[in-house]
Figure 1 (cartoon, rainbow, N blue to C red):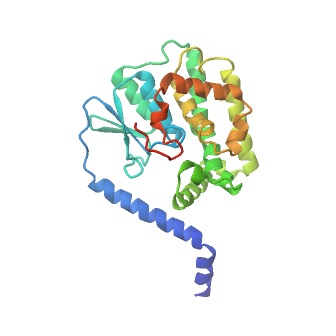
Figure 2 (tube, rainbow, N blue to C red; figure 1 turned 30 degrees about the vertical axis):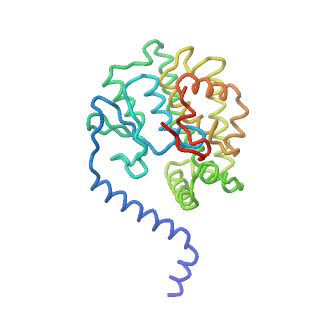
Amino acid sequence: MDDIKSFLKTHYKEICITASVGIVLVKVIKWRKKRVKKNYPPNTIIHHQIGRGPYAPSITPFAVKLETYLRMTKVPFMNEHDSLTNRSSKGKLTWIEYNGQEIADSEFCIKFINKTFNIDLDKNFSDEEIGAGRAIQRMVDEHLYWPLFLIRWVYDPRQGIDVGKQLGFSSWFMSLGVFFAKKQSYAQGVGRHTEEEVLQVMDEDLQALSKFLGKKKFMLGEEASQTDCAVFGILSQIHWHGCGGASEKFYKKYPNLSAYCERMKAEFWPDWDDCITHGGTRKAPK
C-alpha cells in the first residue's frame, strides 16, 4: 500500500494527464460514431481543420500547407473548422472530404486533388527540379517539423516563454501538448536527442532551406510549386507563431526565408487579415 501511495504521489501529474487524454479520446470516439454527415455543395473540396490561428491562418503547418495548395490550384473548396472534435479516420487534424469521400494526411489530400481535378503544378519543371523539390518537401514535413514541435511545446515553455498565452491555449491544453510532444517525438526518434542536438538539427535544416532558396522567388524558381506549400506551411509557424523563442532566433539568421514567407502571403493569401484572430482579439471572418 505504501508503494502504491508513493507511486501515486510521484507520478500524480502524469496520471492526471493520461486520464484526461483517455476521457477526451473516449468522448471523441463516441461523438464520431454518432455524428451525422453534413450536406456540402457537390464537387467541392471540404477542408477540415482546426480553428484559425492568432497571427497565421492555423497553428498547425499542415493546414496552412493544404489550404495554400487549394488556393494555388484554384479548385472549389470551403473550410470546416471542426477537426478538434471531428478528426479523420487516421486521427489527423487536417483532412478533406469530397462528395462524401474522406481523405486524410496533407500529402494524400494533394495527390487526390491532383488526380480528381487533373492538376500538375510541376509540369513546367525539369525532373531534376521536381526531385529536389520532393526532397525539400520531405525534409520539412518529416524532419524540420519535429524540432519545431518540441520547441513550441517543451523547450520554449521551459525558458519561461508563455506559449499558451501567445497562441491562445489553455493551461489544460498546454499540458496535453507537452505530454503528446514528448511521447510522439520520442517514438519518432528526434525526442531521444538532447535539447542542444535538436536545436542544431533545426538550425541545419533552416540553413539548408536558405541555401536552396538563394535569390529565387520560390523554391524551384520563378513559379510556385507544390513544394512551396509544404515549406510555407512550416515556416509560417516560425515567422508568425515563433513566440520569440528558439526557432525564431535561428530563423532570423536567414532573412531570405522571411522575405519568402512575405511573398507567399502576398501571392496566395490576399485575405490574410480575415483568416487570423489578430492575437485572439476577434473572430476570423473566413
